[in-house]
Length: 186
Image (cartoon, helix red, strand yellow):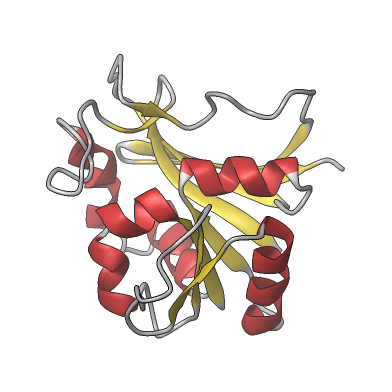
């Protein structure tokens, strides 16, 4: 399964305003990750976090990859990182197991193969849109934080046209976050 894993404000923003490489989460954006303080607990946030780290590959959008400092070449446990991008300089060799891929279907196929019987995690609004439009996104794990940003980078702006039906498969409430899991109905 290819699963989008994103934390967002209640009003749908995944970063605050004015995000950049120097300020990767925008103004106030790191507030979205307060729930990770509970990632080592036995509660819902710990369970969701451990589930995410059990994935076998990662697909990231280029903007997310760059704003995250390319994760130093290792997102978690050395899993392969596939960076979905429109184009790239052949001389730009990403660190660690990361590689650039320009075709969304090929990116999904490579990530699925690399993950084996484990899920593929997706980070980045742009990557999610591309995978959804190509029919390659299977599930969404959304961590909704009770804060309103009012502006920033929205997760669901400029989606491909057409109705996308989702089936909710899980809802977990924890301190400072609600974890929602959806299956994309194809």
